[in-house]
Image (spheres, rainbow, N blue to C red):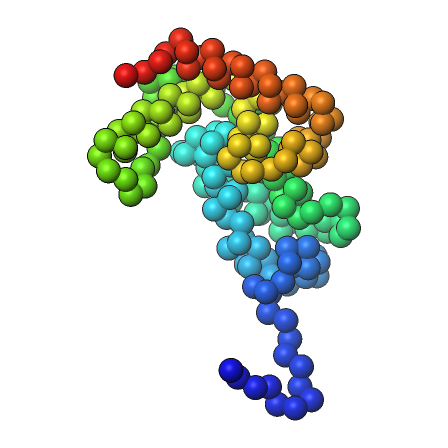
Length: 193
């Protein structure tokens, strides 16, 4: 265990700070705090973008999100809500903007999801199931797809999804219900192997 010289308090390190504390530092132009936030959240931001707009554009979306976070850092209002919810709102808005600008991707062109370490049979079934779900998600409305992604893939509560999407809780619950129903229908129509 290392000891500090008596009378000298160690400064808090950005990587040990809560997101809200880091964002307060970012508002004051602290680049190290910004790097810590990016490192801490890049995988989740790319993950949300990948599920909503696809893997090709996901990293570009993430880069845009963090660029927007830096350039609009003065818009962060401490105490107005959690940083995580605010960040997901930025990601959601950027994905929506991107989706509106592009044309639909044909199902046959949908990219594959990489598998993790499983046996060949499990990989085959998991890949086929994930591919079917991913393809079915493309047929949901944009709000349904976003609500399903945030709720199931990012583990946000329905209330957090409502905040991120700027909707009422009832509207989000309705989107989730209709989205699940549509997914069931689509997967039943194409039961797979």
